[in-house]
Image (cartoon, rainbow, N blue to C red; front, side, top):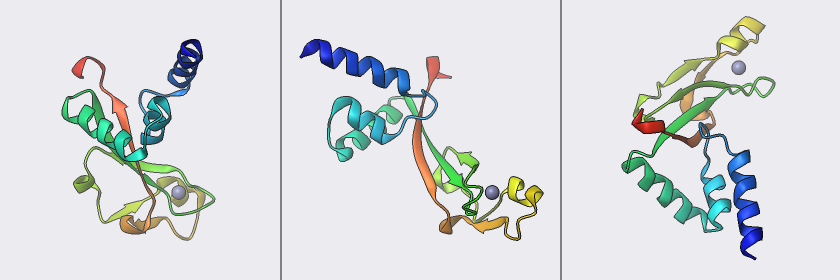
Length: 113
Ligand SMILES: [Zn+2]
């Protein structure tokens, strides 16, 4: 039982990018409800272990790239331009951010950097 847990833990750590930690990673890691996982992440942010990030996804389905990432929700502008879509010649490349998908995740802060 314990061995299985250790194996699982190693697999999850291996598959988790320290720059992109999702609440779901933490949830499955500790096998706890999402709400608790979110709470743990937010606590880690207050303790300076993790940094919360907000990534804006492009609204063109063919693109779907992360246009830009922000540290604070309040830093997100009202409008954003996807340079990739602009270069690709898509008719729509400027978006209102409140209509876009915002991906929330956490970054591990190494040595308080
Ligand atoms: Zn785009």
